Image 1 (cartoon, one colour):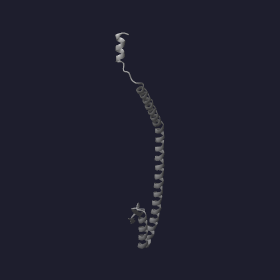
Image 2 (cartoon, one colour):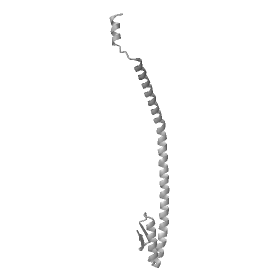
Image 3 (cartoon, rainbow, N blue to C red):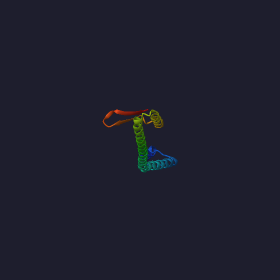
Image 4 (cartoon, rainbow, N blue to C red):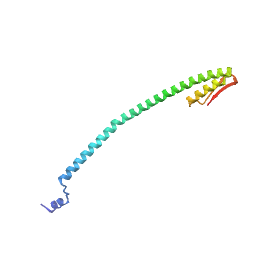
Length: 130
């Protein structure tokens, strides 16, 4: 052996085998966890987007049905109010008209104002207000 070989041996760091094994196992576990996380993120991202779109569609369908029902209800109540206004305008029966308006507005807080106007006659405006 020469002096060069002995110097190279001194420069080499000697690691125990247990440290090498622990390092290799840790690297393998980290790589496997990383690959599982990346795969799960890739595959479930599309599923989460689809699920969010389905939820949005369900909510919009529900809201549209509610709005449709509300508009139908308001239209029916407006027809009743128009009939009542026409009949009370002819008979001048204030008590039945007042009872009708109280029940209509107490049951539906969304109803604020109803007016009935004959075509080309502004003087015939009849109003029910909340």
